[in-house]
Amino acid sequence: MSPGAEQEGVTREQVQKDVELRLKDSGMPVAKEAAGFLYVTLQTTRSPDASGYSYSVGVEFTQPVLLVRDTQILVLGTTWSLSATGTAIQGKLALARVDVVSLVAKFLSAYQSVNPK
Image 1 (cartoon, rainbow, N blue to C red):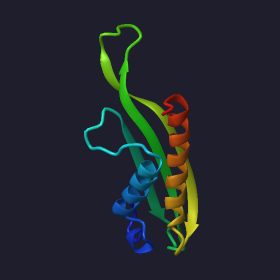
Image 2 (cartoon, rainbow, N blue to C red):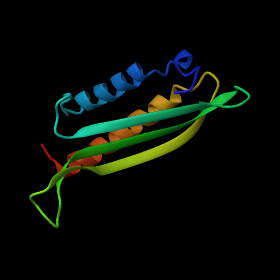
Image 3 (cartoon, rainbow, N blue to C red):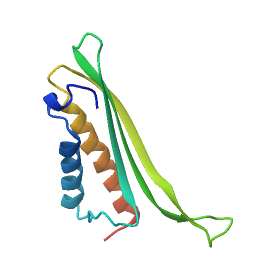
């Protein structure tokens, strides 16, 4: 993240907490040793005149997959991804966290549609 993002309340730790809370609230387990994993990125860049930020958010789910050509080969593959970009004026970078949670919610909806409880 760009310098100044932490002063705006956007830290790696806070974004991780936002994501984990959303996952746990949906009933999805959060574990460091899971077979699949959700990879969340948030890139921020401060504008040259320091009046605001541009940002990009990415969410992707990676899990073990079998190759069609040889089902004995198991590899990790990204099976779902979505990204978004945005801008925020000075003092409003926390809006990027809203976009992170929104993309995570879209992932959860897609995941639950093919993995019903």
